[in-house]
Length: 331
Image 1 (cartoon, one colour):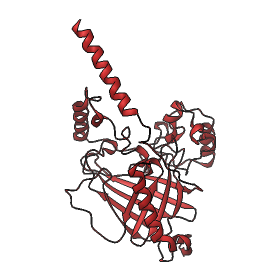
Image 2 (cartoon, helix red, strand yellow):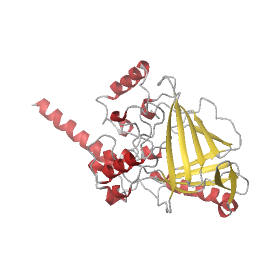
Image 3 (cartoon, helix red, strand yellow):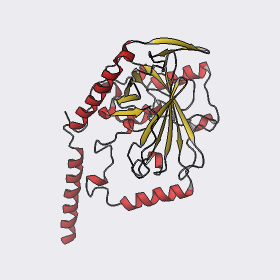
Image 4 (cartoon, helix red, strand yellow):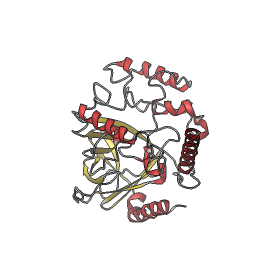
């Protein structure tokens, strides 16, 4: 077991011990139109193991135009097409589609025949457009310069390789949390006095969110996952995250990325919604909404570093190729 995994487990166990009364005793309070489980201190009970798997594509397929919601009949037809394994058409299998081309997903416990759309929405990005707004010209130029600087140096050392290859920050571990497909991603939430902890199955990462009213850390402190502070608004946990680095690069974002996440407890699950703001990248904010469903779990340890020879193999292969090129040039 890596030191990072051990640290994550210790952090989670500590918070579980703090939150035992809340975890063991759940009450229900009625709010207009719905009944939401609550902890003894009156906060919405977000605790449990949740799944964000869905067939809903991230952006709306082009053929649907401004259509935000399927009818019941359309949803049934779209689900049937996706479950038959026809992954060639745009939008089918949602986030699972690219991985379905490469893997037999049943080997990873991800059976397409059991998948469902998580709502009638035609895309996870909400609103009339249903797509991420166009990137600003200055942002496109910035990202092109970044790519140009790395071009030809992709295999110089481990530092040029993606964070996910280095087991530092996997795509489904990143915030904002967006569904992936190759193994699913269970999410476990534990609440305690002044804190909410989110454990990601992917890379076994533990995120501790303070809800005690503290401010953000100073702007000169920058983190890959930013600095998150939370507050309660009715049945919703609102998490404000700033202080990202330019290495975060969420869909081409800058270090001015500002993220607002909303975890809203419903009688049947959690509605996870996030709004992305970055005035250096997009002209306007955009929002994604993902229903989470209850899962029995358990959440197993997801190890990445142990036995991972990807980086050393890639770099060794690059050195061999360079040696062969040099030998041909010398002849």
